[in-house]
Amino acid sequence: MKPAISPDKMVPVTILTGFLGAGKTTLLKRILSEYHGRRIAVIENEFGPESIDNELLVQDSEEEIIELSNGCICCTVRGDLMRTLNDLRVRRQEGQLSFERIIIETTGMANPGPVCQTFFMDDEIADYYRLDAVITVVDAKHGMETLDKQEEAQKQVGFADRILISKKDLVNDVDYQSLRARLVRINPRASITPVNFGETDLKVLLDISGFNLNTILDIDPDFLANEHPDAAHDHDHDHSHDHDHDHEGDCNDHCSHQHHDHHAPHNDEIGAFVFRSKKAFDPERLEEFLGGIVQVYGPDLLRYKGILYLKGINRRMLFQGVHMMMGAEPGKPWLSSEKPNTKMVFIGRKLPQEIFTRGLEQCLV
Image (cartoon, rainbow, N blue to C red; front, side, top):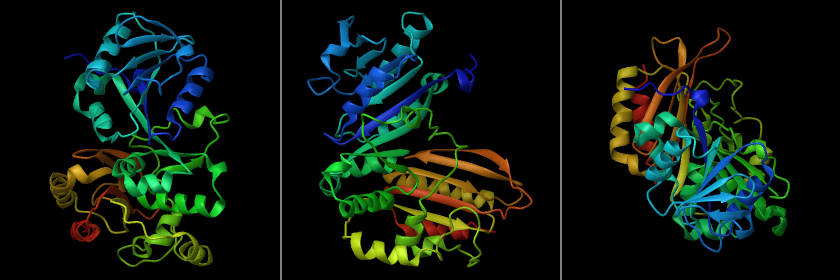
């Protein structure tokens, strides 16, 4: 069995998703035309009049591999994504192709879940490629309507590590804030940035490490304050403030204003909740419970991620999952100045928050 290549030698992969017309292709064209000095392989899920402009294309070398004028390689997924990635790997190893990273642009109607899972299912792919992040583009003008009508659009938001809002200049601030609040409710762990694709800083889109267990688990404090007062309180009712986003007491004016103006009722299928505790988990009980939850709710669990405080372990454990697949690894030791605590976020379709919360509480020591 050949050893896996070291993480810094792995090829980073960015998944670019977003609903039809949100601006994915505009963003991709900008990356390809401006991101000089790096060779990028682009995999497109669909290839037609809406994809990369023909003037960027130099030649059709083979059915699926197209050389772009700035040295990028574009391939269309007419076949299976796994086969395409393995084909690119073999050709890169043999020196036929030269690229440093991959961007996968999904079709506007796609659920990013199966694309993400590809990087965990196949050993050769998992050893060679490093899934960096899912970036989702949301159209400010049509985003609300799209989220109302299309559950796939909600999944795209739920999977995101970073959400880019395009066309903000076409809406007023109240509508923008309303859309932003809804995106936070669906996915409180993705950063949300309005973008003008002519001016996007590409450094914020690449090398995000959203799928790296060691990245900080940021949860939007507005999510805790506005929507889920219970989630913001620790489960053992210790209300002391610590440094990581316990904002339940200090934004009442802002929160009531948010409630008042922006929160029209939206029955989104996809939503999120946060579990927090300052008590330790019993590791065996927790493992058994999470295993059962994943078996029952795996298809509806989009992303879940957490920093865990486990009995008998003097460092934080980091865990995350996509659908049925989860992993955990040890993180930094708890500092003497820190109160060890657990913070977990679950994003998925119609998840029974009460069942999850009760079950997790029963795993506490």
